[in-house]
Length: 63
Image 1 (cartoon, rainbow, N blue to C red):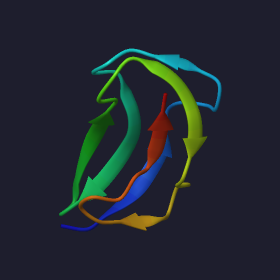
Image 2 (image 1 turned 180 degrees about the vertical axis):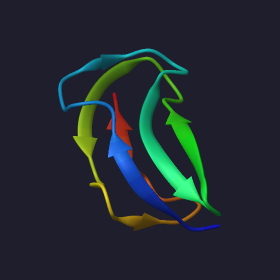
Image 3 (image 1 turned 135 degrees about the vertical axis):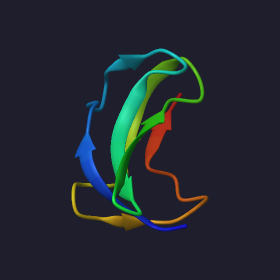
Image 4 (image 1 turned 60 degrees about the vertical axis):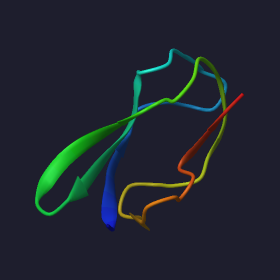
């Protein structure tokens, strides 16, 4: 399923916890918060608001 990035909630260098929301995605007229899958530091953000993403796309890199 495809969706559109509405908002990026983190910055490169920011510490995040597993389960913390990192982006807001709109799909089928519903907004969904995408959560970090692990605790770490944001190393890269691969999307910006307005970008279209699909299943399996990497939106934020956390190490």
